[in-house]
Length: 325
Image 1: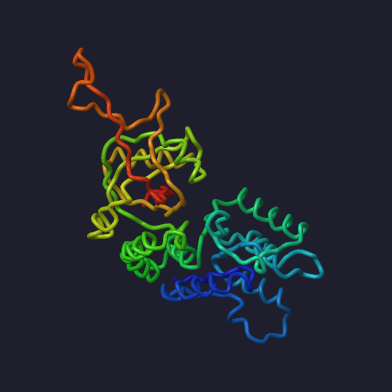
Image 2: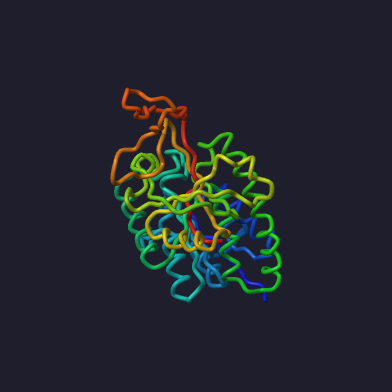
């Protein structure tokens, strides 16, 4: 049986995000409810929104950096009241928050009043406490994550078949994203992609330099060498993406995949400017690129030591593991 999704968000700042989500859900054959199709009604805007929530099966909350319209009676934002209605009625609730480190919004699309910003922050804290939230970096990133998540929550045969087609396309989407990322990494910074990888060697602790550049927890971040086996034919094109890292609570999930030797996973594309050499931590000694020479340096016949510097890099791109596929 087909199910209905209600999209809850502010509008001015998330117009493009709503459009991308709307088109994605429609392509899956899902019935969508939201302000785009309210039309003229005798009821007020809030009453219309709450009635649409009541008639929906799934509530999708998309929150960025605006609190939005305020109900004059309760002095609460529409988005909060819509969420409360969904929670009261036991609806399936999916929450997506803008990624503070990757999402880009102009200042005029963000609340500037300190009190309003604190109210929005409190709303987000409540959502994080009560739900497992997902973050998004762009409209396309949001739509892809939502379509993936809905497979877990919508059980109709039509949706499952449509989602299977979406899964098949996910590697094609990843190939396009990786190609664009390696050309203009700052533009796709924070984008999540699905990959199939084969691991090489053993995990290693990530260096202090790498953790500082990518804002990871030094001493609580690991890396492992790998190569991308899918998207198909990407091994040569994406050969510079030959490591993947995990930090915090994601480490155990990555290590489980490493023990299996290969597997599907999701990774976030990340980029930093500036030179970065040495990705492996050395907790017990000094890092270096010292090699023995072929000639002796003294009458005692001791081998000489030669420092072999690497070519300085202009930046660094990495894959940051987010979850198993």
